[in-house]
Length: 149
Image 1 (cartoon, rainbow, N blue to C red):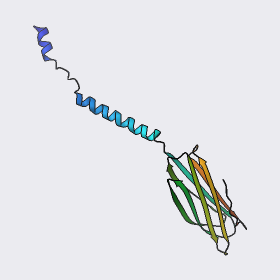
Image 2: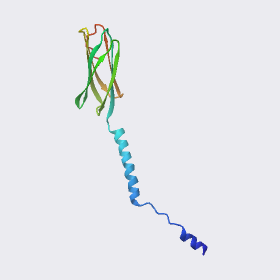
Image 3: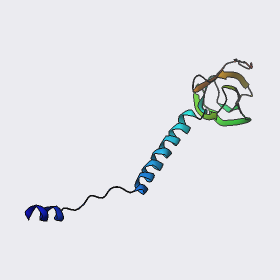
Image 4: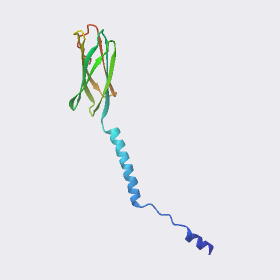
């Protein structure tokens, strides 16, 4: 009699329902889809880093523009005052699906003494790295436009 009474007092374990399996499966499928779209979507994020330095004896009022081809031509612009012998750094992000990217940068500065400085650079880059750098350096009597391809 003791054996029969003990079996009746133990609760039966419930098996998980099909709804719970469907819920877990849906969550797992969503996580896999997010990972796949992140790593295999074909999009690349590129940082376009720019540094402007000057070695002239006056403050400069500058405007630098970055143009890049990402299905349409996009422009990023920075206006700033560059103190005597100082530098300025800024960065822009570009997301593209292309394997080759055309990027053009130009920087124009006007000095206090009516001096004008400008430089331009162009890149046609194959996407192997996630960074493109533009370095503009303005020196005394530097009014040339230079192209770096």
